[in-house]
Length: 466
Image 1 (cartoon, helix red, strand yellow):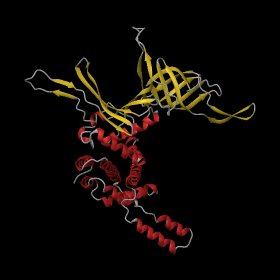
Image 2: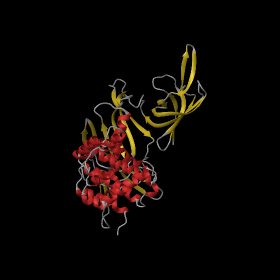
Image 3: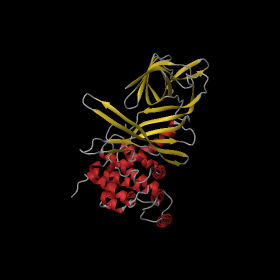
Image 4: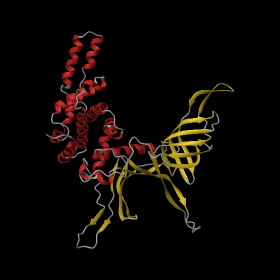
C-alpha cells in the first residue's frame, strides 16, 4: 500500500482540494478529500429557482499533485460525500492511476510510445542473452556473462512493435550467511503508434499482446508493468552552465491499475518445454502480424476464451457453457457456414416448397425462419475439430462425434436449467474444448503439425492413461 498526500482537482478547473490517495497492492485505490467537489446535478424549473434532481455527475478523471509527482486518477467513482452543496469529506474509488503526467481524459491523444512487460515474456522469447561456464574440481574459476540481443521489430497497420531485451547487468546481495551474484535480464515489448494515441487505444493493444502470451503459455499471463512516453517534452537546463543550450527530454509516465487478473512477477516462469509454442518456433516479427489478424477477426470469441484464463475460477458448468459459446462464435467468425450438412441450394428448394404449400400466416413464417442455410452447433463443432492437425486432435479428443454431442447436451443443459442431466465427465469435456480451441488458433497462425503435436501431448498430461 502506498499513500500520496497532495491537492486534487478536476480537469479544466482551478478548485484544488487537499487529500490523500491510497494505492492498493492490486493497483486500484481510493482518494479521500478534506472537502470535495459539488457533484449534485441541479435543475432550474423557473428563473431563480434551483432544485436538486437526485442525480450526480460523473468524475471520470481527477488530477493531483503530490510533492513533485503529477498524478492522474481514472474512473473515479464517488462512494461517500459528507455535506451537500459544500462537502466537508469525500471518498472516491479509483480503477487506474497514471504517475508522471496529467491526462485530462481517457481519449486524449498524449502517448507516443508504450513499454509493456508481460509475465513469461522473457522465457517465451527464448532470449539467449546470457551464458555461463561451469567447470569441475580441476578448475578454480566459473564465469557468467550477459550479452546484447538485437531488438526484433515489425510494423502492423502503421504501428511498430519491438521485442527488446533490457539487461540490468549484475548485482549482488549479501547476508550474514552468503553473498549472491545475480544477473538480471528482462524482455519487454515497445509499442509505437503512427501518431499520438490515447490510454484507451493503448489498452486494446495491451490486451492483444497479453492474450498472445496466454495462448502460448496455456496459463494466464498478466501485465507486470506498463509505461509511456508523453507526446510533449520537457525543457531542461544544466544548472552548472546557465548560459548553455536548453535540452529537450521525453516525459516518462507509467500506469497502475486494477485488472481482472493480477500478475505475480516473482513466481517461477513457465518452463520452456511447457509452452504450446515459443519464439523459437516462429519469430516474433512473423508471428505478431498473423496473431493480430486472427485476434481481430474473432474478437468476441477471443474475449470470452481468454477471459476464462484471467477471471477467477467458477463452477465447471458455467466454464463449460462459456467455452461452448466461444467455440461456436470462433467457428462462425472464421469459417462462416462451412460444415453445414445441407447446401444452400437444398435450403433454397425447401423454402420454395414451404412457400408453395403453406398459406400466409404464422405457421408459414415459422417454417421459413427455421429454413436458413448454416451449420447446426454440432456440425460446427465437428468441422472445428477438423481444422488443426488430425493426429494432434486425436490425442485430445479420440471420438470427435461423441465429444460434439456431449458438448451440445452440456450447453443446452446449462442454458435451459437441466444441469442434472449433464455428463459426469463435463470437466474433461471442458478441457478438451479449451485445448482444441488452442490448436485451432495455432493452425490459423500457421504452426505446423510437429508444433501442434507437441502442444497436444503437453495438454494431455492431466488426463489419465490406460
